[in-house]
Image (tube, rainbow, N blue to C red):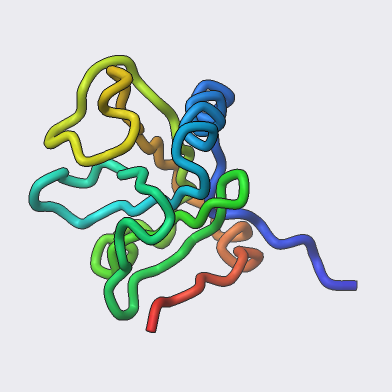
Length: 128
């Protein structure tokens, strides 16, 4: 029997409540975490199709059915970490993300996987 795979991604209850609110207003969503520039490494929430991952970017999981993509270079750095999507009060840099008009900003907390967990991780999907 194959061991249960370990997810690379989870979400706090507070962030999930905000996602439900954004779903009601915008429909299907997607998340993208860039490797720098305008928004730094803050996770961004878009309407599905509002951003197109680059070749070889990594989709590490879904939140409530919405894909969570990470810049390919950033993933190389953070591939040994579990991502927990959270939300904070206040504005993040830039303001491209859908939660910005609500006075909120998504944030990721990272936790390194143990050596044993690394052997059991879910597969990563790469964009083509």
